[in-house]
Amino acid sequence: MLGGGGREHALCWKLAQSAAITENGGKLFAAPGNPGIAECAEIVSLNEKDHGAVVAFCAENAIGLVVIGPEAPLVDGLADSLRAANIAVFGPSKAAAQLEGSKNFTKALCDRAGIPTAGYVHCTSLDQAKRALSTFSPPFVLKADGLAAGKGVVIAESEEHAIEALEDMFGGAFGEAGAEVVIEEFMQGEEASFFALTDGETVTPFGTAQDHKRVGDGDTGPNTGGMGAYSPARVLNDALVAETLERIVFPTVRQLAKEGTPYVGVLYAGLMLTDEGPKLVEYNCRFGDPECQVLIMRLESDLAEYMLACAGGTLAALPEPKFSDDTAMTVVMAAKGYPGTPEKGGAIDLCDAESEGAKVFHAGTKLDGDTLVANGGRVLNVTASGSDTRDAQAAAYAAVKKVDFPSGFYRSDIGWREIEREG
Image (cartoon, rainbow, N blue to C red; front, side, top):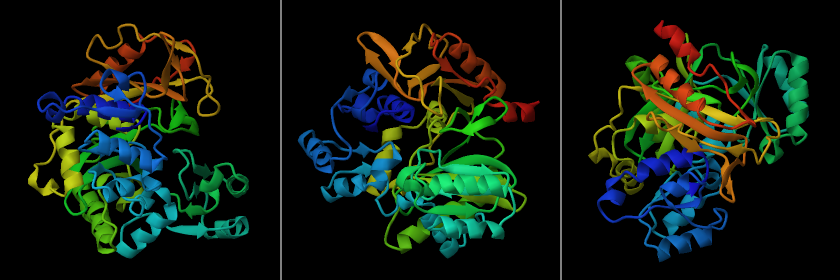
């Protein structure tokens, strides 16, 4: 497992329960890992940017599967380097990972494949972007073209605000990611996330979730990488899932295969549920964070079996993965200052937060001697299950309240929309 966040902790926790590890004498390594991951995998020192070192480690240790957790090494082509060395890998090639690496790439692919999405203009200069605003009505949706750690999207309520945001983007606020910008029409509706596994040809659904992007209660404040999530997203009913597969996911996988860049791994479709049906907001080429945590909490199938089938082109031989009917919810405990500059080094005591069946996934932690401390913006993902969203929420917040993290904060209303629906 390459990665060291909450998503990777959840994946390691589940992979450690796989038959490949528990029955067949396998071993799970992780790099760089974190203190939570260290409880279920052996931590090794590897730089994901040094492809040669990763390949050499895999060869020396007879690694049967590499799982690449974050998006950056996928966009950097690490999966290609591993495949060139005949090492099985769960994750798309550099070319296919452009689905997340470039907003314009995905928009253009949607055009070619007839996939429903928002109207857009791709801009390569500030002057061009300012002129393009006149073709849209407020609010304006502005997206840095490249990877921006989930923070490269601005929804501007006025043209003045939009121009300020564009000046920031082209001025380097998001580094190279903002060198090009996509301006989109604003889509009305509710957002939801749909996940699928694919080996480049076969596609199998892998659950639904809803995320909470804004930092504050009531969906207020700036966007973050995600302050909490729950699964399943029942607003994505069977009919909408079928429509999403037929109109969005299947055409994407077919188009990429047709163009010689087959997609292998998890395909995460961010959707807007409009009056005209589901439309693609954007793709991610890895499991969401914190959506992964709630999907994995519900997964009853052997995760390694499905990842190996994707890597080996044998996904058609497996049934659809099985998930619990329960609702899972995760609450992000973040360090004060996030999503700006987070306060690092705050001491954390998990106490007995996991005593009632909850699971605390480490997202941004490290050990300072024997003390667990905050080492990032999003620090912990406190995750629990229940028979419905209200029960899952109660269980998750009961566990949150047991965690002693004085320099942390969290939203108190994760799941509010689904709870309103449930009545």
